[in-house]
Length: 245
Image (tube, rainbow, N blue to C red; front, side, top):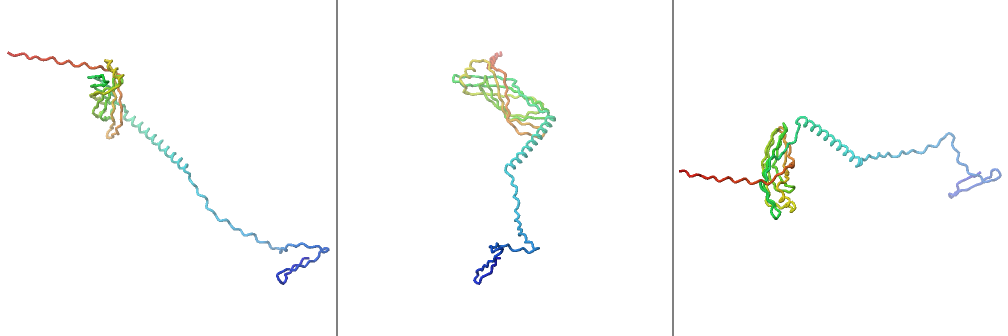
């Protein structure tokens, strides 16, 4: 049996006893009080943390914007197609036609220095086949070419082209000592009849009732006709006045 007692100076006194023949005994744990359970360890809950907020990525916003933009464009195209269909059913629009009905090459001189001097008189017939559409033309610029060589420019004043109307346009074009390529100059000298073409540029708009559209640039190309240098008109014969008696 092991007995432990406190000494007078804080020391301890140990007294050994013997058991079962005097062997050294081992310490025994303190005895439990019957019917008493040790308290469980104290539970300390962890502090609550706010859930992480959702972040919208820039890619998500970009995809959403592209989707909405595509839907808007498709809707506008669809509405535009419906409007054009209704416009065509109601008005049956047709393009106006232009025909060069006469052309007179009054002068065409090619000098030894490859410069061209010319004068051209022309007539163009314009027809508007529409019943309810009126065309408005600004000033018309006309550029003439003979065998692919520019030989004269001119301008015709703009006009209002009513529906179901045929308008005759008369004008002139000229060139004063315009320098051309030597090969083209030699071709003009060698021919008496020339393949002619004309380009006409203007700003054109249309009117339907009170509605007026904006004018847009339009170019008309007429070709496939030929012209030769016009012969000078004969001078009138002199008139003799008889002497009266």
